[in-house]
Amino acid sequence: MSEPRKIVVVGAGLGGASAAAALRERGYPGEVLLMGSDPHRPYELPPLSKGVLLGTTDEPDWVHDEKFYAEKDIRFTPGVTATRVELGARLVLDDAGGEHRYDRLVLATGSRPKSLPVPGGDLPGLYTLRSLDDSLKLRSAFAEAERVVVIGAGWIGSEAAAAARSHDADVTVVDPVAVPLSTVIGETIGGVFRDLHTENGVHWRLGEQVTEITGGPDGVRGVKLGNGDELQADVVLVAVGAAPRVELAHAAGLELSDDGGVAVDAGLRTAAPDVYAVGDIAAHFHPRYGRRIRVEHWQNAKDQGTHVAQNLLGENEPYLATPYFFTDQYDLGCEYRGLADPAADELVVRGDLGSREFTAFWLRDGEVSAAMNVNMWDDGDALSALVDGRTKVTAEQLKTADLASLA
Figure 1 (tube, rainbow, N blue to C red):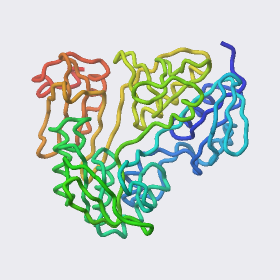
Figure 2 (cartoon, helix red, strand yellow; figure 1 turned 180 degrees about the horizontal axis):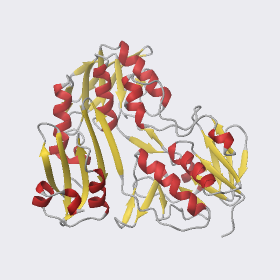
Figure 3 (cartoon, rainbow, N blue to C red; figure 1 turned 90 degrees about the vertical axis):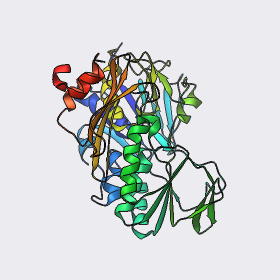
Figure 4 (tube, rainbow, N blue to C red; figure 1 turned 60 degrees about the vertical axis):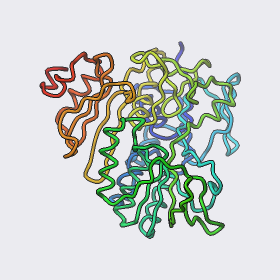
């Protein structure tokens, strides 16, 4: 494979920016174009639902400082959206009238918040949370609101609910599930988060469907539930998940996976010559799991962006990193490593759920498939080793033995 003269990266979030930077770190001398529809320079998303929304900071964690892209000779075009990819011509077109030929192409277009398909789901004044501007607007709304309804009890909804309570708003969270976060961490551990929010004044409407958002041209007034109740609200946040931005890839003819992402192999390559995908949109064939997985967390975007650079320059190394994410809610902080199926895997708890100082493990066929440390920070390396190595252990060993020795 000859060295490319020009590499175009579509999407200037963490994945795209990491790819562009890694190319320069590897000494690539050719042209690098980094296209981003966001008006800001690349930033990390986790602070948007944490520090920025809480009001402890006005800025996210910038991926690089302001001068980085010019100093590294990376052509960065904020506020410019790619509108079409012509695979045969190796061409990217944008909404500013630009045409950009490429030798290698990286798609890192990220995700958008899902909408709620109910009457009133498009009313002005509904909030979603994905960008820095979204977070700043929502923070201002929380500060002035008396009553907030959060639709969705996933990670974003849970963190936003905690932030709204910090602004002294009355907060209700609605979700069809019986226990928040149960599809990811199961009902037992999800119950820890439910109880945490309850202790901090959040009202739950679990196991209930939203049927309508009420209001008019001046904004929202409330949320109607399937049982006929209407929850009054000054602010309604829709946090029902994210959808990968694959319209560009789909229109170009790239293969999509069953989960809606762009199908890529172990090395993050699509079936189209010299086209790669990373981050939220990448349905990546992971050798460890023997199937495609698509991960929407910041660590995955960062690591895939960094990893893809070597393959853009002629290598063919599989991406093998274990999924990882973290959350901070009130006085609870945790890290999660791996990929569990809470409906099928055996849950093992080391420590005390009641004090919210514990480590949860999920075992599959006697191997550690995932681990989650909650308000315990000394065993991170051992947990990574146990999950990465799919270590065979017993439940009793996980509860009582020295974790480093098991790893």
